[in-house]
Image (cartoon, rainbow, N blue to C red; front, side, top):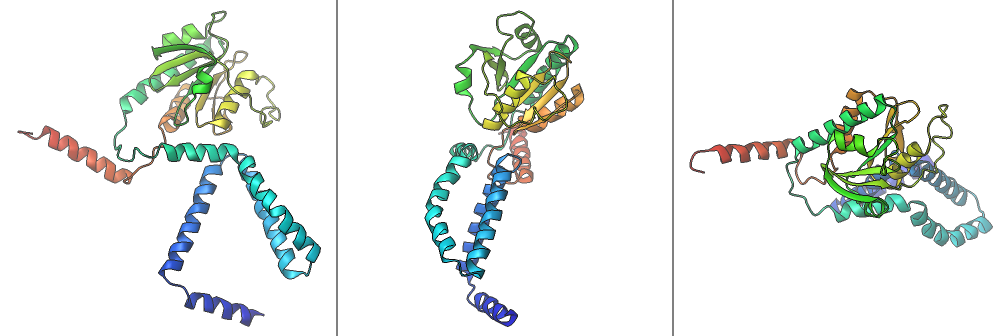
Length: 292
């Protein structure tokens, strides 16, 4: 049996040419992209179960003569192919949105000062809100547009400042009940309604003080790539939700570091990061040169 296996493998290697290698690389790239999209989400568990089921079915159908089982497998395969897009609908939608925004490949610089000001304003505001035990839910829009949730609130389109966030989330103010959506360095809307998470992550938590704000933060992080900052009204604890996960009990320094890590849009790069930095330096040098 081993001799037959070795002979088949040697036969495959003999027939291997550059087109076959390209074919294998393309298939591997597709699997890598799919796994990268579902990494860190609930779809990983479903994908793992489906892979295990396919392996078991393949072994049973190839090693044992099971005609009825093989017929059942052939009959249910089309239904399985239809069910896969339904199961992985959020991940597929997120991937298509990323491809749709992949046209801006030649952007080599980011406005780091604007990002820094935005993070500083959010960090200062959340620290003051936590000190007074004022509940807050701040949603930072990234690549996935949040237009459908903007329509549920009150449009502001105001420059982001700590004082504005403090005024919005002050107790008994008209806009304090709901979420604030931040787009760039501006407060796009307030009192927005977010989708609630149904994953059960918070219900399994030993801390029972997590309520609707935390469920809404997890919910918007599950359906988009937004970053949600939550301030607990009962305890004043600061949490961040991203990609369906929540990081809790953050101080001001950790909050700023996490926001700086998550805030930058994950734009598609045409060149490596080191080459982009070199191009930026060359552009600055040529701009400073005399006679230019």
